[in-house]
Length: 241
Image 1: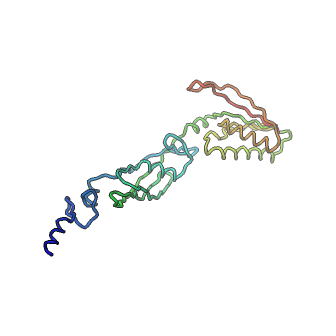
Image 2: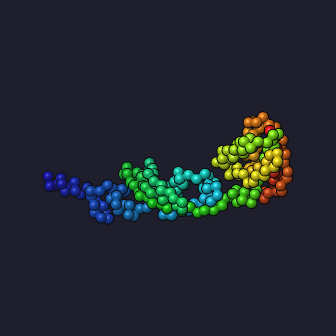
Image 3: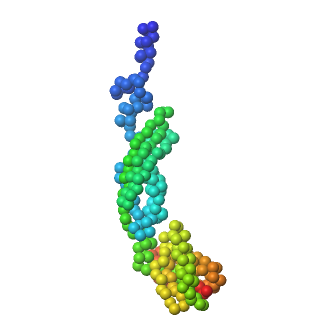
């Protein structure tokens, strides 16, 4: 029996660094010693993301998106690098405020059939900037002018028309930051609404014409040439109702 015990003890694994025998082993070392010498996860402690202070959209991978904590979390996940881990998954919580989002939790994964977990704590600083579209809109930029003319002007009617225009802007703004009203000029028989986006101006005109049975007259004027050499145009949509 003593000989068998000796043979068993000789075959029993032990960590060459700390001598442990009763811990999980990874690649010949106990789990703790292996993790001390192998970096399986790389993550930043602090990152910065830009947010437009006017439209509140986020700049993510070169594109502007409506603000969303979930989008920030997904963006941070892309910055967490792991090596050798299989079946990787994240368990995170996000705590946002006006200046930053604190992301905490852990990354879990498997190596040599051993489940490993790594705590994470990343501070996402929100840098307030002005996106390109809001910058040019602040200088009264517009692509379309929506002219509404009434056969008989009544306050409830023109208020209703303005509501339709504003609701159209809200609906389109999610995917078109230029869908904003930059100016409104009131006239005796109607008003002119200046809109940053041609598409938004056209849609608002069509909705007004459909709602009140009016007619649309379209026209455009040249507004110069952009950096790529393409001719820029300003469009006018006249709706008589």
